[in-house]
Length: 458
Image (cartoon, rainbow, N blue to C red):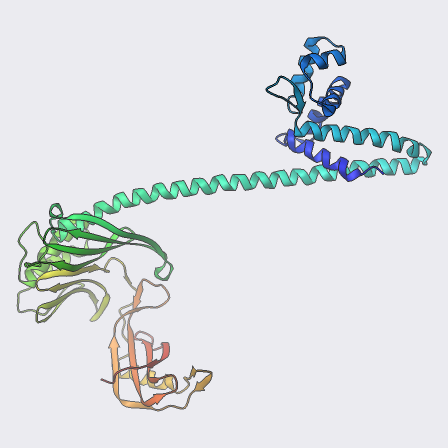
């Protein structure tokens, strides 16, 4: 018996080869216009038996050569001309012949059966056949549309990667200029005396910092007398961190500078801040520069406007902080920090531009924060290897209470905050010997509480 699915499959193949660039009506018109001429159908049937030359087909058909040329051009998608000069069926031509033979079989077999059916069944059968063919065609249209979408997606993905690569190259170029500004102009390392190699460059979007784009670069600086590693960090394209590491060298170990460097920490800080101000032009650096100009060597702490200067010297090491202060509240996270070792700058970090101040109100004193923390431990428990621990004793002394503003809901907005550490009378399951409690200094609310292990009692 004739297989109808085979015929439908051939129709789908034909639709696929002709293409679905236009409407369905246009597609079907192209198919049937091509195959409706008996000469063209005969050409396809002849070539399905064997490949033939132009002259052989001309003899078989008995038509003028110009007509055969016209028919062959019309059948260009259905036939292939080989190097030998003979013509054969293409895959589309083979599918077409299969469909034509199937249609002829349907006509010869079904005509006899169909003529004996009542008119009602004839109509139903005709509608059914038309529906099947249309359903197959629609299915192929959907498949072709999906296939086109897939190809379009592939092209878009390739374009995205190309643009990403171009942006990365632009980023590297602009970052290199900013890197040289810090190393050469601010820190005053003589880059002409070193072979500089970029060791790594990572770019990351920090979701924990509100989507900040952070770029960290590591450079190797090698000269005849020393090898240095320098790490720089940029956040949203703004300089954030410089770190200096001397890996090896011969005396003197100091890096090679373009200018003689001061041995006095305060003088070195003044010069660095002034050069940094010239490079980035952030307004807060003006107040810092003014404050440093009025600070003398004996001052360990000074305040001007919203800037507090604090220096800590311990032997050959020195730390300088320029932090934001307001209403007597120091925001230590919003700062510029300089670290010197043997009069050489080891670190320069700028997080002043990075943070905002949400509140300067301090309504909770240190003693009140400690009591709030003690009360919070009464309902606290922790899990240690499946055991819930809730029966523990908190010592009244010692107690550690550190005040430093902390982010609350927005990761870069600071609020006054107490960090309280309460010590326990012994070590409990899980190695826990203390409990840390965070208390908001403006509202008195408990921010967080956690069990700590291995804490040293101070």
